[in-house]
View 1 (cartoon, rainbow, N blue to C red):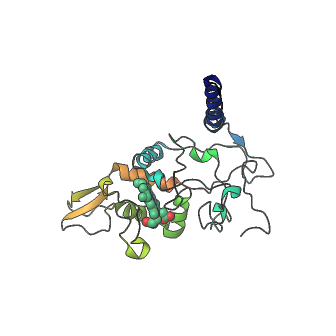
View 2 (tube, rainbow, N blue to C red; view 1 turned 180 degrees about the vertical axis):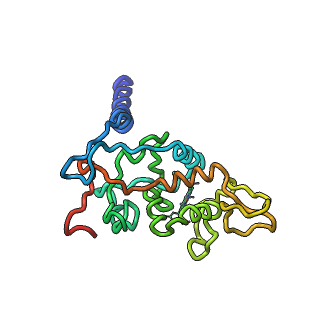
View 3 (cartoon, protein in one colour; view 1 turned 45 degrees about the vertical axis):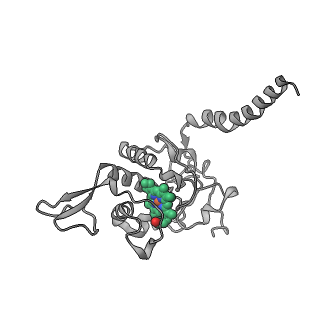
Length: 234
Ligand code: HEC
């Protein structure tokens, strides 16, 4: 084989893969055009285009900086690639108290407005795409407190996860002297007398972001790749 053929072969084999895995998806996904709800078919009308607030974007940066994506995915896989829809709370809630079955596969709009679509590298810890909804369903108004405690020390509650290898994010919290009353934001954790542990700005942004991870909004039926099929609601 001549060097010329070798070089062409090499370029074509790597070039094709690069083109279809990097270039094509980039151009297909970078300009998402809004999708309309269909009257009569969808429970809503108008245009579907979720927005992301600044604080959530800040939190997403803290998430990225701390490598959370190394162990946590944020994607409810299409059913042909996994059984996420059937996992409790992962892809929505099977019995949402307000809306009934909200399970669906992820779509590109789930990452709108963020610097990165943090779909994750491995699923070492649980998937987080529906974390906010899942925690609110379990802890109600105390979902944020639960998250702060988890971030401070994932092994705080041995009954839940003494084995957890989720890293502690203690450095996002501040130890402050109690001046007068204990702050409302103070964590219920052991600390020396006269002091309290309160979340710092990065911890607050991160918790806003984590709680914003909800996979339960109504999406146009044209985009809902996992509509509830009667008789197949397992
Ligand atoms: C080394 C792998 C690893 C990294 C890195 C990691 N986690 Fe985890 N995480 C886990 C594992 C394993 C669990 C399951 C055990 C538990 O609940 O503590 C978990 C659980 C969680 C939970 C509870 C999920 C639930 O469904 O209740 C949250 C929230 C969480 N991690 C957030 C984070 C955040 C935020 C970061 C980045 C600051 C992070 N994790 C980084 C491994 C990791």
